[in-house]
Length: 182
Image (cartoon, rainbow, N blue to C red; front, side, top):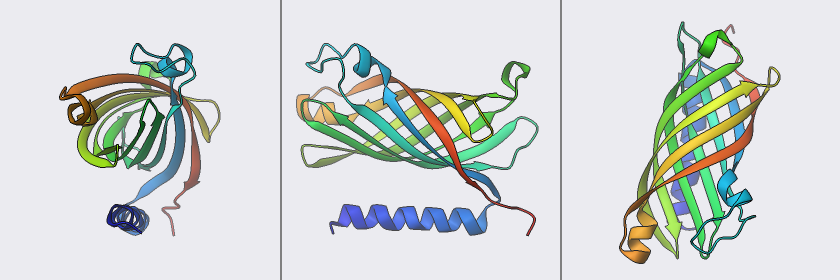
């Protein structure tokens, strides 16, 4: 097992253990999003419509307060571009509840950091996102994720540091709630 995989596994395990025993989390959620633009239109960089680019996220939600709650989590992005692109990251943010006086609609701005892997090279990267969620049921939400990512892989490949905007459409599901009244 490579050092990167060992470090990622250790970080994830510490993250989960720390979250379950040290913080009063309300729930743990999983989401899967796909880049809408690449799926429907492709881009002008040689990636046709139907190009796969998805983000999987594990997110912990804190206890509600009057405005909303803190969130943090891990994410993995995989894109099948001309050369494969993967990004591992962590993010944190705040979810605002009762947006437009509708409890079913939440908005979550967040920031993140991580590593892009492209052509066997790991490159540090930042990201910022705004997630819009609408509850379809108590455990399932329709989710729209707008994200800007620092594409350090483009600097490595083409000597052109760029920031790319992506619009992802997906579903978020509650995996489990953590009982606070033990």
